[in-house]
Length: 283
Image (spheres, rainbow, N blue to C red):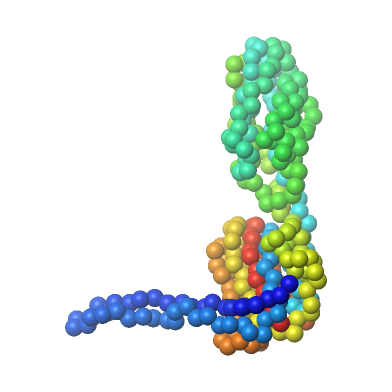
């Protein structure tokens, strides 16, 4: 892959209008957009990094190979059935989730008079197992009176996930509007090329990147989540909140003194899930 026309864009500017008596006109404060051509650039990579609290991705700044710390946890939600059916009809089950198609999703479950809580809970599990919008994301499980949803792929905790149980046209169910978040979901530490799902120090064509001689430009853009990124290196440290951007580039085409090839650049997550888009331009 051949790199050409590598550039860094910087600028921070505001306009001001004097309000003192006898003054007119406007002023420009700061510097407008400046373009620096990084003529020495021979390589570039853009990657996604996702972290949850206490997790980290450490990148060797010579090889650009990441080391990930932090395993994912599959979220588990549990509803508990209570009450014996006293008149046949349908139970109403409402499943809510931040990425469930049709959420809040209502599922009607046929139940019979004298069904115990364990019996009709089994019928609810069967009905949920037949609902693609749920089974594409969760494994339906549980036994006796328990009805569980277990996330198939580990990811951040969905605080909206809920299974409510109530009478529809039947009677006898003890209404349970809220289920229990028995296991909170945790997103695993992730580092991947934007063009793929993994990253092991290779470019967009899958070829290993050469070892760096110099780092020419570096940008971190916080794009999702409420957590914060802490970015550390032997020569600098910074914190990015939601929506913030950190950028380093030489004022003239040249190398960065604060990111030395061979050091470790570490991204750490704090206070919930966060995602960033990270770009490196280098020689």
